[in-house]
Image (cartoon, rainbow, N blue to C red; front, top):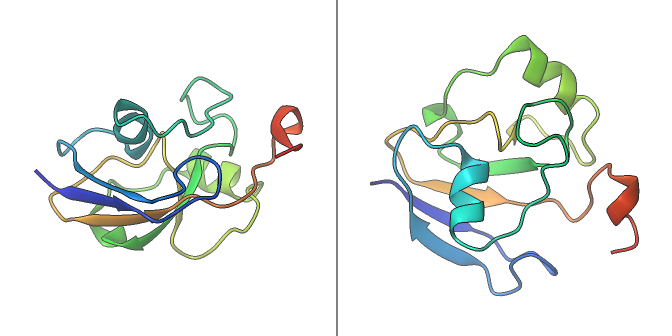
Length: 112
């Protein structure tokens, strides 16, 4: 199984994390299964950008990005060329390094 390395995030994962996750699972589900409570305001249906992550390693091994995901990513804070919606990005067979941005575009949680 691919190894997922999560870079430290001041609220969600202060120490960073490392775990294995099955190929075909979304990054979001892998994070949630490992007690990293990434936001997913739309219920993981790709209709918001609150689960935005930046894939620092292994980006090309992920599932193809849909046009809908590309459109939603345009709304994400801190968008980079290797950004994905974690609820839509399916893990491939390579190890990943993931960074969770400090902010999300979610009015409910902006007080972080």
